[in-house]
Length: 287
Image: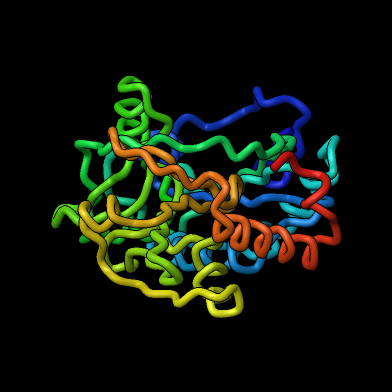
């Protein structure tokens, strides 16, 4: 199911101008939003991040069109839970890097897919050779150019792992290819700062915001590779897969699958979803 520039299509093969700068140059950005009980979770936070990214890229955003896309596409889901993706590109342009000096007409695309039940399989992380550029403003938005993450994930999977740890150019721990990283040291919950090249994740924000109510002391600071390996627990968080725990980094193993601190954080997030979206995920999702 696809909504593009005001038109809803039942199929994914649709008319599309091949001069679109999103296709040719990755000139655009996107948001991926979990839907529970036909309700997008943390929608306003996602839309705010989308707007901030568009402002950074100087792409004018039409909030009414974005809302039209969302309210049109979500009812097309065949299940109550799903995944919404909103993509905004600068639109059609002439050949070359420099955008047209005239006001751009962005392309807005919305898609929905049915939810895949969570099973919280343990994550095995591989240290990627590909570095994340903390000096690039693109590190703080979900730009359409994801080739660094794609290559890092390919590298990890080919080595027999499920995801990769990405360091920045100063060799500080930043993220996995699609998630923020949290380290637990007793009750200290540590994650890298945005200034290290971290995407300000929506789930990351919730966990930092609510850490004290869960019994943790939240801390944003740079993490070294050795500090990552010394953590009691390493967690990955994002808006679709929520909270997952890491059991292996390179060849180092943790035996913490049943650690109560993991379930405190997971259940807190599930309860927040229940309150906002009106659904009992603790019983509905495979955890």
